[in-house]
Image 1 (tube, rainbow, N blue to C red):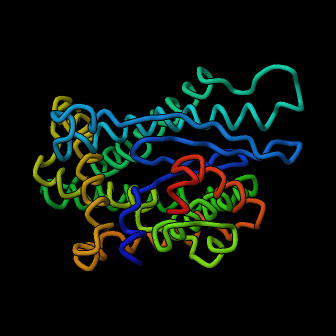
Image 2: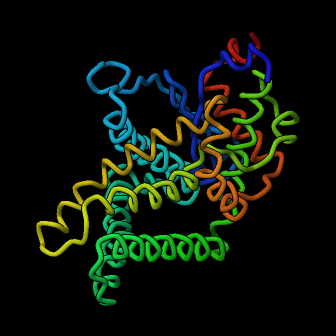
Amino acid sequence: MGDEARNHPQVGGQAVIEGVMMRSPTRIATAVRNPRKEIIVKAEDYVSLSKRHWLLNIPVIRGGLALVETLVIAVKALSFSADQAVEDENSGKGMGVVQTTLTILLALVLGISIFFYLPLVLTEWLGFESGFLFNIVDGLFRLAFMLLYIFLITRWKEMRRIFEYHGAEHKTIFAFEREGEVSVESAGRYPTVHPRCSTSFLLLVVIVSVAIFIFLGKPDSIGDRLLRFAFIPVIGGVSYELLRLSSKPRFSSIMHFLVWPGLFMQRYTTREPDKDQLEVAVAALKACVGDKLLES
């Protein structure tokens, strides 16, 4: 990667319904291909709260805040993509922000129940007394549920196009990071796996949760259980910081062992996109960082 490409802003994103959302430090853009095969782009300026207030930019705190901001941005992007996907089917809007928000909140409740509460109950049922062993087994249950979840969604045929757009997002970001500019042709040359992907983040959450919960010991009371749940934002914040470190060249070799499982799992959560999907991802990136920056 040349010096010029390294000076470009860090970009992240996510796949949405028939499209891609891209986010830079100053702008968010979502590009969606509607039923008429047109690419519709929505872009807006946005600076993270952690960049606007120094107190919110403290490590771990900024990670927890970033998770909340990411969730809010995801709701808006998904709502926009849902509206575009159904615009030819009825005169009304699609899911809408309220319905999308409720859907994601329900998913969060189910996620916390399945990935944090159920492993806790199963581990208690096995009767471990040692706090260390209790949390190791609890973590193994959590990892097993995570892997089962990923396996099940990869078997869902309707998710295949989401995975293809996920791959398009990664390939486009890779081209931008390596070359400082991007086109459908250049993006097509890069892999579909990326170290800053949310899949890597989720597996980091499992690892970090085990380490933190070991210090908390075995939960013997309702208060102990609530304390574990209260630490979930901290776990997310620490995982976020580790993922940031893994993307920095001087730390990449040290952090590789933490992110390689996520890179491996991305082989299942991403698929090779076609040129039309890459075109959508490139449109989102250009709207996010600006044509002048891409051509600089």
